[in-house]
Length: 218
Image (tube, rainbow, N blue to C red; front, side, top):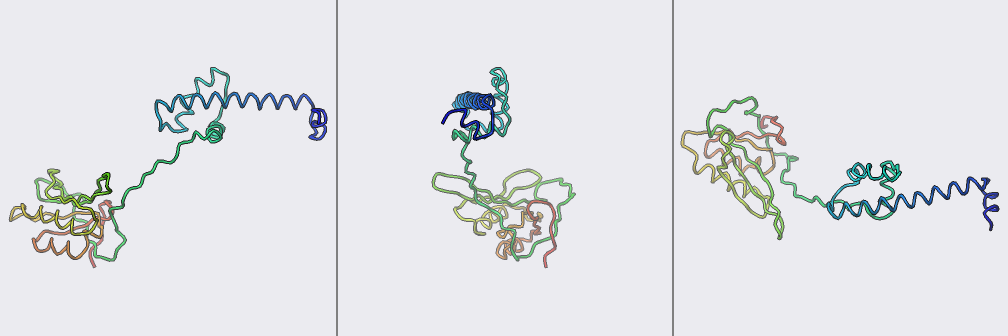
């Protein structure tokens, strides 16, 4: 079929057909230039994202007479499989606040500290290793920032938190009764942990998700 025949079928003029073909050819050239520039930048910064690339390359593209919006820029990279694969951000959740255990009134909001052993803050974090995750239980003195107790293990069970608390209580001066502060995770609200505090006479207080707000135990 001739070009004239195609134009009659499509209801367009020959001039319009050639104009559109020229636009398509220019788009292919522009896309090739964009891809080459992106590959060159990614060799220096492999994790450089699409939005940042679009901003970085505006000057070079303008010099070549290429005007490319962000959506079209994204389409070019997608067509040439140059979009970054999502980075895996798997990490363990160390806090479970959705439990039926008692929680306690916040006692440290607006509290001005003047010395160590007035408030202890307990928390759990994780350490990534080649063999998996380890979980670090910490008890920190809020005034001095000193870690007064710690325990590292391979589970999130309350036993590790109790071990860290035991280390802290072991060196606590006899007349000190710090307020205990945590994120209300189940490890810190369980009966075993609360009983360990009660034995020493420390006041127990938990904070929901670190927001410095809590509820009185039922």
